[in-house]
Image (cartoon, rainbow, N blue to C red):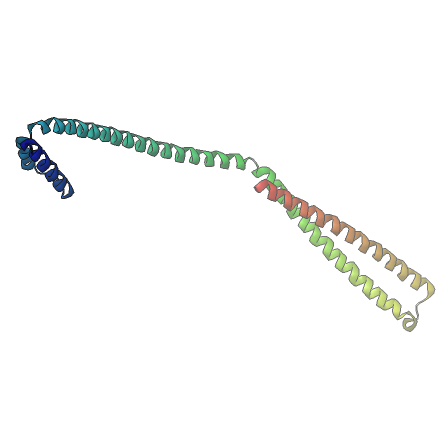
Length: 188
């Protein structure tokens, strides 16, 4: 075998062995070049490729840092815009405050009216009950026909009042529900 072929085989074996064991020292590289001077052109190509790879990695890292900075700036800008949106939305919602307050005032008035009408209904029911008790004892009380007629007229009037109270309470209850729903809608 040619001596060059032996050296090439030795060098390739040595490189393969050293490549598996970590980085090759500078002395080993110099020994290989001494043994095979033609190998130096491969090392030059390898250095050029490594330099290009390093340059590409540097460019990539610079671009990555630039993108990270832009992302950070965009996130900060987004936070500012969201804060502005919330502020503007809050100000716009406050435009509804007078209408909501007017509805709340109406609601309070209707609820007070409802309580008064409920008290009136209870009072009328109580009077009706008392008059009916009285009329059930008319023979014991020796009431005349005119007096019984007068008490029956009062019963009739109280029944009309009670029906009127119930109708008004139903209307008030419907109006109260409506106002509460309107307030709920405006608060959304």
